[in-house]
Amino acid sequence: MSRRRITRRAALAGLAGTLAAAALAQVREERPIDPTAKRNISHFTTQNWQDHFETLGKVTIVADTGARCLHYWNADGSDYRLYPTSVPLTDELTRLGYTEVVRKKVGPDWTPTASMRERDPTLPAYMPPGPDNPLGTHALYLGWPAYLIHGTHDTRKIGRRSSSGCIGLYNYHIAELFELVPVGAQVRLI
Image 1: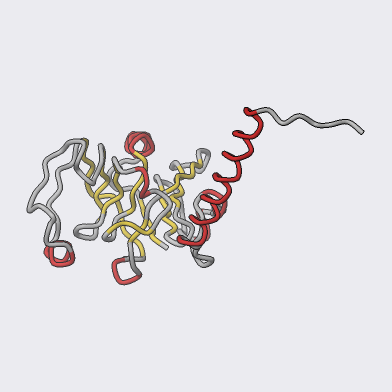
Image 2: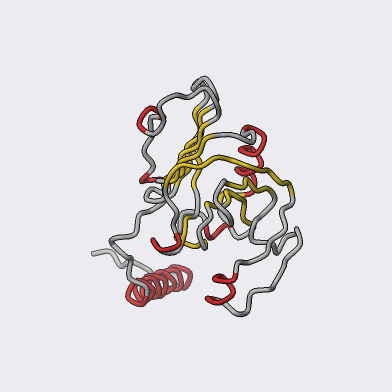
């Protein structure tokens, strides 16, 4: 019968593994996964523009608040892109329907609405462009007042319900989309 020798290094590695497993189990117990929450990329499904618009002819965007993604088509439908997004915190903050891009801005400034400041009195009255601005580096203003498609410096928000009504994208995605989307592009939020 052979004796197996356990080295100090093997014992320490085993102990570290056991402690790590215990820590992970504790985290899982303290923060259970919400079974109703959709995860980001795994729930993306492609959309057909024909399901939302009668004609293309111009740049088209569909922001899917359920799947937390934005669909883009160029004017002739030959270029289709899909971006992960953040979406409004609640259904009450979510505006659904048809609109269009009415203005574009690089380096947007931000003035929280009265209802935003009522919900969170710590919000500033105004925030200039910059790394702390929640609108990120670029913004596409929609035909509805105070509703935008914009970037975010806080990348943890993407794939989550985290906005006060806007659709948020990673800054590098909104920069790309900004170059592709003209004023007048048709938009639908579903």
